[in-house]
Length: 158
Ligand code: SME
Image (tube, rainbow, N blue to C red; front, side, top):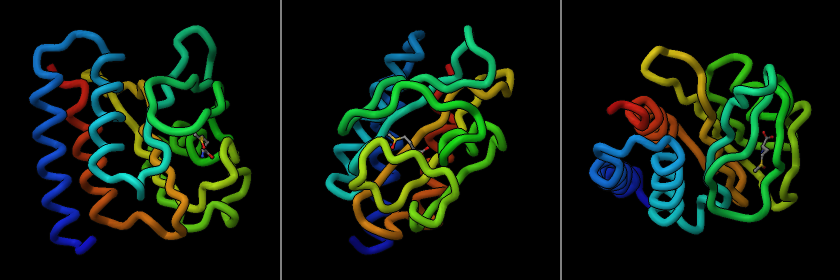
């Protein structure tokens, strides 16, 4: 897929997600919509697409939320693996080769590269991370990062 085609597809999927979730009050419904539409827009490059949510009942722990893909781990402590580092640092993690990432959690051994983006609520509190994994090495670039950050930024806006 060329960079231009990829950008266009992100623009389309952004509009689609925002149209479907407009007025929706359920966070679960918003996360489910984004994981489904992103997964379908970028299959098969997006092998696992979904959210780990900050567990309000357990300090510094993520619990799996809506996703598309093979079975994901249920819980990830802050600081562990790519998702945990994203949650602890509140910064996007772009990992070209998961084998080079210390403490990477292999929920599925097929994963070769991944990108994890933080999701904040309207009070700027971290509520989740968006995790996208690929079976291709080095599958994500700056276009993916910018587009996924834009989707995550607007996902919980009313
Ligand atoms: N790859 C993630 C773990 C979650 S899953 O693979 C679905 C990580 O290292 O954070």
